[in-house]
Image (cartoon, rainbow, N blue to C red; front, side, top):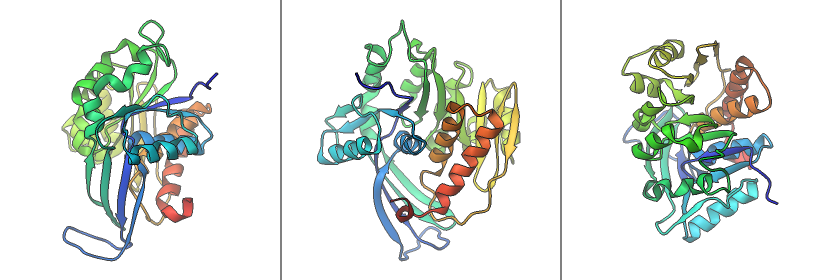
Length: 298
C-alpha cells in the first residue's frame, strides 16, 4: 500500500526561471548575474522544504503532459514527494520568471494558467476516497496557495472536504493577497502572509507585523503568521502572540524564501513544537535559505 502523506500541498507546481545579480538593482538595469531554471511554485517550494525535514508531502496541482511536465514531476518524485494525485493538463506546464538583486525581488511574472484552468479537478483525490471524501474528509495539515482562482479559494474556505483539515494558506504574491479574504471568517485557517500582503488584505498601512496581526485578528482571522523581511515576524491568534527577529544574514536569493519560512513553521508544529518555538524555527529556516546560493544546496 502507498504510504499516507504527512501534508497536502495544493497550488502551483511549475518551473522557476530566476535571474540573480549580486548587486542592488532597479528597473532598467542590465548586469551580469546567474540565471537558473529550478522547480518552483508555492506548493512545490513548500513540499521541497518539507522533504528536507524528512516529511512526506503530496502535491495536488495541474502539470502539463509535455516534456517539461514529465521532467518536473520526475524531479518531485526523486525528492520524495507523492506525485500520483497531480492532475495532468493538456495545457503547457506553468512557469514563473523573476529578477533578483541583493536588495530583493525586482520584478516577476507568474504564468499559472494551467493551474487556473484546471479548476477543482485538482481536488478530485480529496473527494473520491483516495485522500478523503465529504463524509470522511482529510484530517491532516494542508498548505494552500493563492495561485488558485478566487472562486476555487472561496469554495475551499466553505468546503466539507476541508472541514477537518489544519489549513495553512498563503497568497503566493501581493497581487493575489485579497484572494484570502474568504478565510478571514469562513474557516479556522492559519494565514501565512508578509507585511505588504497583510496590509492589502486589511486595507490598513500597518508598520509592523504585530500591528498587522492585531488588525487581521480583529477582522475575524483565526490565526496569522506575518513576516517582514529582515524585520521581526509575528505569530498571533486569540490565544497567543509571539514575535521573533530574524538573524542578520547575507542575501544570496529571495525567491521561495516565504515558502521556506511557511514550510519550516509547519514542520516544526508537526514535530510538536509550541507556537513560539515553531516561529523561531521558521525564521531560522528562511535565514538559512536566503543566505545560501542555489549551488550550495545542490
